[in-house]
Image 1 (cartoon, rainbow, N blue to C red):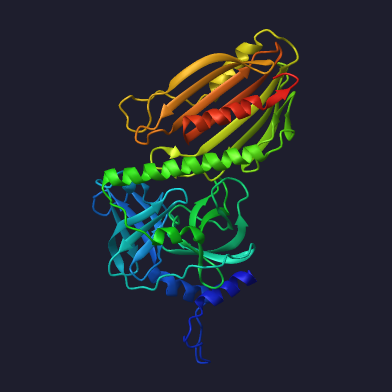
Image 2 (cartoon, rainbow, N blue to C red):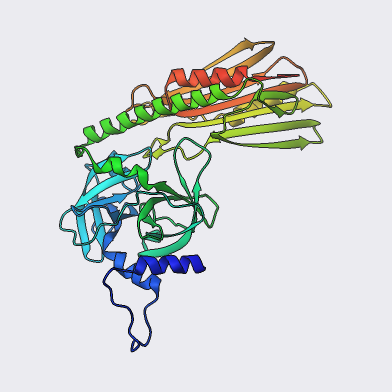
Length: 431
């Protein structure tokens, strides 16, 4: 705890502030002085639907300019961006509640810039140099809307997986703290609270402060529904293009002879930006063994109603039956259906189109595959959609390979490129 106490002491130090005199009976703890000094610059961000005293969404934010600019997370104000005619935004601090307007947002890095008038507080200083891994940090926020809280922790560097930069934090962030600041030992902001790992008590994530600067310049957005929708579409298109470019480049950089074994087959090794797991399952009574290899992209953005975008999930499995060939492919058909996440869609909805599904048999090298592909278009974002591919090999009577590829927020050509890569990359004794 000593580094954290030293951090709190440095944060609490204010130039010109008199030190405690010998007559002071009990000097306030450093963390208490830090809390009181920064409190006017920290906000609870509320999304209101118009009902008096009620909130539709709640998060945290902090002052980043003398003109009243407040930073928070995109997902905190996502419902407002989706329906600006239905919701309003407010910021609450020790001085009271103020209406705020949306200035700009960055859905890729989960940031939004707001502005309030008449804020009488000092903006927090943004760091220009990154903290070193292992450094003590302090985060602020309003957990569950219960009140402003200070949490001490450790900065562990950046996540090695995924294509979106995320800070790794050893600290127990909670719902409602999203959008709050993360401060280093100099009292400067090094990041913004964004999420906590599911089922984890102390592993959380932050957005690095380097992502803030682009939001502080440029023209303010128009906040009517049509303009905000157009900006979301623009950012989604740019995200897809950049993700596809980087992902295909990472795939191309993996040597062709770099393979992973999956039971009786092998596959070209996925690039390191993927997080991958493998496992083996055996059903002794049926005499069936399944070896599984699953990969996905970490920290993919998520937006209101559409959910995750620029998301890729890959599953490769190998099945072997030792006892009998009868009924083996019937079992595989049931297995394939269990992995399909395609659901009926109301044709009149404004989110995604009803899925279009195609089934076929194709030959890839020496193997014959049964393929089922379903696609759904994003109604409001032209050219982007969801893709679900299921493939089962049919070349062997007592063993088979299985491939599942699920992608959201991509264009068709990107999906086809990845589908071809993973399908053609499976080889071995019995694909």
